[in-house]
Image (cartoon, rainbow, N blue to C red; front, side, top):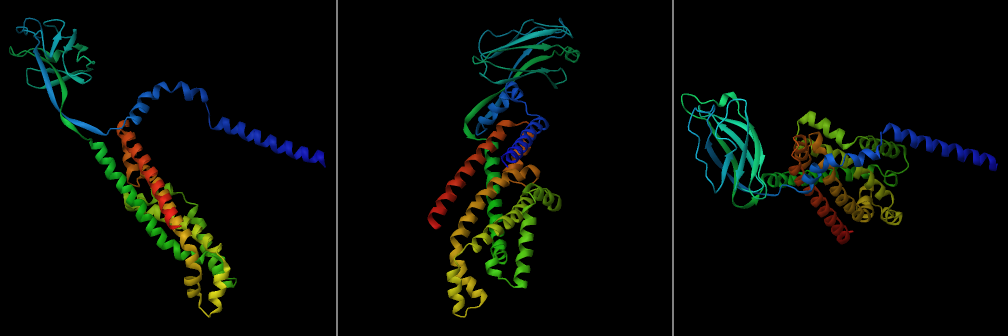
Length: 376
């Protein structure tokens, strides 16, 4: 007997080991890659933890010097020796040459667009540079054939940089995130409310102690339970995708998906709460000659109200979290905004959305805990 037990234990242990080995291989787990790729993601992580919250209005400032192309086509510019200025390393150049352009005393740590102002009056972008902490920069610029002087009109070399003006104001990303996070909160609120209204009466039909032991009650109980179980088997992302294709991308599709999920989840939780009540009050009310509806109203409802409130608040909290993910499949709200920002590689704006989600989830968790403590 002991030998058989050892054999069975060893066999199942071997199966577990094989399952983990195969799982490790098919999931392509690579701990070395996790750390070796960390350097490539540093900029993304840095943007995510530094959200785009405030900004300042900017005004473009342009520095301009005459730069003859080719040499001899115009008089070289007289370059200043102080103040914000750009200084090429040569006074003129021929097409195809590469010159060095330096900037001095400009706005520190700022982007600089180096442009050619053509004789036609059109601007031609050349290079993008960035000033250091002292407001200086150095860039290599190619002299293109299109910069050749026309009818004695020389080309100008320009450096354009945005200079902050005025005070700090909320960024457009912060405004968009606030608007979308409010949409997310109300999506969860409406879905939870609608789901509760539908799930509450259904839950009594899915409680065995309410439906009784007769064939009709058992049939209703079995059918309702089966519907709730089938509905719960569909993930909210799948439902959101279906509704997005049905009614279009946006918050409406998300509310519909969350409502279905809420009905299935709360219906099961409510019915289990009903089944776990004390049978004494039911028998006492029934003994007075009350009909089934009156039994539910006076003997069941008072017992389940605290549990119902707790489940409702908890599910609103859950719906807020789920609704942030539904946006990735067109369900609207903050998740849709986050998906858009990630798709266009605007990670600072994505970081703003992520931090907003964290704060809202934390606030909802605190609020739901306080409400449950007070009313349950």
